[in-house]
Image (tube, rainbow, N blue to C red; front, side, top):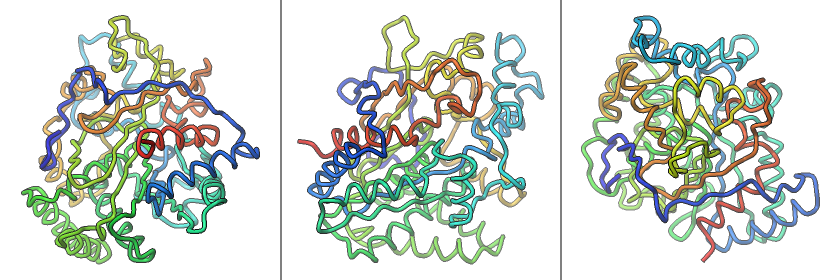
Length: 422
């Protein structure tokens, strides 16, 4: 997308990404409990420090208890309910496999659902129920922190942030502002400024919040920024959410300065993020998109997923082609906000950021099989998580592997290779 993207949707280009694209297989699978893992991660820490990275932020949500495929919006807009899938072979079975409650992804204990609070109780619950499946656990973040700082006199902080996991436009917009407020706090607390970098690693739809952040950080006076603030301020006032109102005011003041976030460069890595919102590269640092992908195509276009019906309904249960959540949770899909006021605010944001709606539009976007946005470097990785198992908890349809303990060293190496090696 262009500079001054102004919250436009990605163009969903099927063109070859060219030099932006790299392809890799999972390698360097050293045990996270081994001396080799710690020693290697320590070397990576030295590279990060030399590049100016002062903090690493791990941003994620929850796979359990959330409509990860966004079937609520598809059902509301039509889908099986209104027979829009009639005449398209295989769609009925595909939608049934995606639907919350039928897709094999469990609910949270006690019926916990979004919005999830970013507190120790909820994070501990996720660690106990999900482990490292699409979840940066406390134990793993602490292991990384200890290892990368083993040879450093000035430690790199490692911070785990849990976003609300509200898979709709309103939830992601609030997450974007909350993240900017948190980044401002980090920079203030660590006295960070120009020359420092913050590396943000975001799993799944948390990456869409980063896309909105990139638009908010555009140095130019884009028209979408005050409009988004107006929508969110109206919503906060109507629902008497003083905390959200305070975050909006803080972020507005931060973005009004000549050097937002104290001039710190924000480097961003997304893992398994669906291609939806456009990115604006002008106000951020480096950008990399990582996708779990196994090429099943016969036309030579190995950078695209394979979206053929009804075959996909046989491939998806064993994650044969890689990350099916990343492939299918595209425009037109979403969770539905819980209240009428939230639905109204969500619709206003949706009209800004996503021109696609309805079942047929979703099917069109899914069939484009695009793995990457139009901005940033691209890395297709065969994480080798398709073992033939049809138990979703073994792979979560290819969407869980990015945060598994055995992939963290590899992911760190590939991030350094893309960003910080000359």
